[in-house]
Image (cartoon, rainbow, N blue to C red; front, side, top):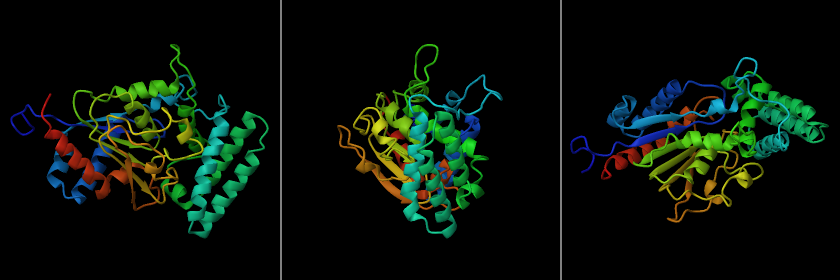
Length: 334
């Protein structure tokens, strides 16, 4: 029996996987992402399904929250981000991360103010390379982030209140890839994050996955351990293609599309500084079925374009998501 024949059809699942950032309320975030996706769906001509999506009558939607795993429960304030001397060269990796972002974005800077800020930040990173001691390196990296916060887009977007908060959020990428920070059971931070994500994936029915920023890295690795069907993986603002810091540290190597993924669409915005190398099909191998990521550019309005909801409100992003969900609903039930 197929969807629409009584109540026994497949009810598709939709899982959102977030990226870097501070503490957030999963239910509020789920609502915001759904609202943005519905806006894009209406632009793409899916008005009736968009309304059903917002009312949760079309699909079961989950916001896979893992951000709390990056916070120290006994820190002052309870949720302070870790911006301190890291383990196994994490701070140097963060320096390399910032360096790749700046070196990739600098040639594309159109405004004089933007170019001036980027060049200043680049000079600070050059000096940071000679920093003596991890504590000194951390202070210099915070200063670099404070300089980047003066970029018009980041400053007016209000994403980060200080260089320290920005550095702490960006360090979540390098901390995940460091494969360190064991818990009392010896499970490393990255393993705990993937375990959390897999808890939101249903192996008994098709699931459309939308992953943002660091979430795209987590999704890529977690889906290699998933056995349920993923008719569509959507990545937005992804750093997977960063060849200095991210790509060489992905697991497994060489990076490849997970076998459970049937289609992979990757979206990037020219003004998104976190996705400096957006053509993932150049850096990821196909899976056994020949599936490769297909990258496409979007142009978002506003100041800070890295936000997931900016991407989801695009018709070119939401349209394929709605089509995949509709097709998933037509699959025979198990």
